[in-house]
Structures are given as structure tokens and as C-alpha cells.
Amino acid sequence: MGRPFRFAGDMFERVHRELLDTSIRFDALDISDVSPDRLEVARRTWERRTQSEFRAIQILSRFLVQVVGSGDPIDVYAGVLNAIGDEIRQCALSIGVCQALGIEPTMPKPVELEERPATVDAPLVERALYTAICMLGVNETLSAGFVTDLHERCDDTVIKAVLDATVSREPQRSTLRWRYIELSLLRFPPDTLNHWRAITRAAVARQKASMQPLLDAIDPARPTLEDWPDTDRVALGLFSKERQALVFQRTLEGVLEPRLRRLGLL
Ligand SMILES: [Fe+2]
Image 1 (cartoon, helix red, strand yellow):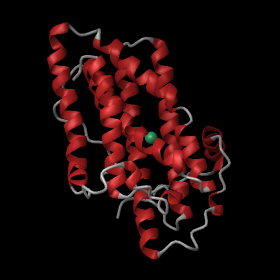
Image 2 (cartoon, helix red, strand yellow):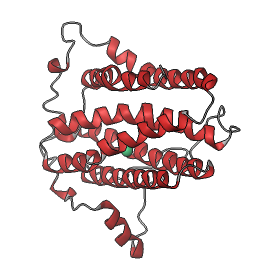
Image 3 (cartoon, helix red, strand yellow):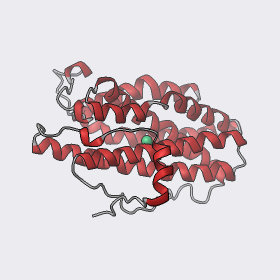
């Protein structure tokens, strides 16, 4: 078992609440009609989300060190700070959902964020662009696709409010992320583009590798998103494996790959 997320309370609670800037009543989440199996899936799913939001706080905090260490323009820092605040908010909201589902979520194990061996000795300016491509560009774009799909369809008051708070600044954040990558690439000689392309391809391939088995397993007679409305799952913010895989494919082909191609990264 990992370490449970904790709250220090006391004087920290006020600033934390200010950051959350929302008054969602988690105890209004009604799970009385949810089957035990579905409830268990919801608990594990939201615990995993809590852990990945926590990882996002860590990765973006390290990214702040990288951009400040690189001497990036001063106004870039505000964008990164806001993004860290957004991830703290999203992590706390996911903890709230877990508690409403009757569990205390735990931190990922190990708690400490591992550095990729390939980047650990690189100059900060390179590590910043590496983080920007892999995490801000590839991973965040794909996860925004998932959250947006849930947000468009969910009508449960509590879960919808959590998704509202999660997507509210996404358009602005997405613009900043891609602009940072574009500007950062200009700092490197043109002949390094192949190196960045290889890093991009590897990041996309890692994501594809996790989804390809789900895509391959989809019933050929039900190949579209309309075939998987997930009507009974979406109230709890859940996906069927099939819908999740198809949303991944839609975001990959419709949003991520065109963006990367425009930057010369694919
Ligand atoms: Fe997040």
C-alpha cells in the first residue's frame, strides 16, 4: 500500500481552499444505485487519476526548475506556475471524488519522481524542451482529449463540476504549451531537429503501445465512438476500454499528430 494523501490543515487549509476556488459538495455524490463491481472500478480509476495528477505536479515543478535554470523569459514562469496550481487543484479534486466513493487514495510508489536516464546529464535547456515535448505536448494533449470527452457527456452534478474545474483553463494552457515548444525549438541549431523528432516519436510510441491492444480488441462490428456511448459509465466519469481507445485515436490523429507535424516534429 502506498502512502495516503494527507492534509496539513491549520493555516495551510485557507490557502489551499483559495487555490481550489470551488465549492463542490462531494458528499452529494449519490452512489447508492452503483453496483459493487462498478464502484470498485470507479474507485481504482479515480485513485489512478489522483496519482497521475500528483505526478503532473511533480513533473511541472521540475519543469519550473528547468525553465528558470535555462534562463527562459520571465513571463514564461507565470504560465508554468499557473499550470502547477492547476495540477494541485486537479489532484485535490480527484482526492475529493475518491473520498466520496469511500476510499482514501494513496500516493504513487515510489513517491519520488524518477528522472529518465537519457536526460539526467543533459543541460537544463535540453531537459526543459524534453519535458515540454513529452509531458506538455504529447501526454497532456492526449489526457485533455479524455477529460474533454467525459466533460461533454457527463451530467452528474458532482462529477460534472469536477470536470468543469479540470477543463476550464485547458484552451489557454494548450496554447501556452505548444507556443513554448515552438519557441524553445528555435534555440537549438536546425540540425538537432532529428534528435527532437526521435524523442517525439518515442513519446508517441509509448502512448500508442499502451492503447494498441485495446484498439485491436474492439469488435469490428462496432468500430466508432457512437457504438460505445458508455451512458451508464459516464455519470461516474468512467470509460469503457473501447471508448477510451477510440477517444485516444481521435485525439492522436485529429489533434496531436497534426500539431507535431506543424512543428516539424513528426
Ligand atoms: Fe492534470
